Image (cartoon, rainbow, N blue to C red; front, top):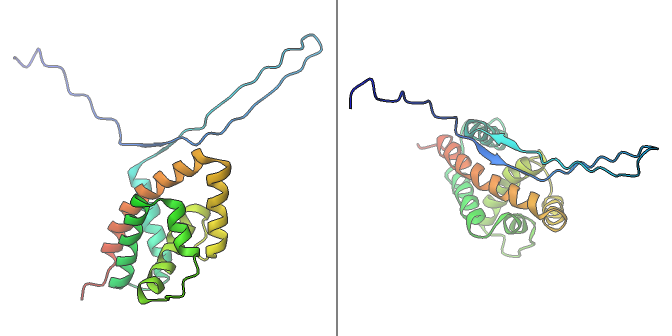
Length: 175
């Protein structure tokens, strides 16, 4: 094929993750001339670039660090466990783990709960110091009253967890 017959390559569009929580806005119009009720339904779609998710995850890790220079290996393990837990069991289960009362206050749980509470609290409620009970109530309400929003947040947590893993490794003290 000659150079003349080749089509110029088109640039690829940016890689976006589409998050579409349902948001219905209904408007009604009542006029004196008409008894028709018009309803407009719009669905809000948010496009999220991977770079934005990475920056968000970086901010979450920075907030958890709380002026420390690096994470300990145990903190990284907790971040990696969160990623696995979200993938296997889901968001509600991860929040339930934070909230559960467990008589076996082992070292793993003592390390896991603060990391998970911070990261999930920031993602769900922009609050890294939220109580386990408040976080659980928020997610339960979301799952019960708006399952679509819950699924969107679960997908968002799965995407963010990859970046939490990356930034967690980047900030782990490897001495």
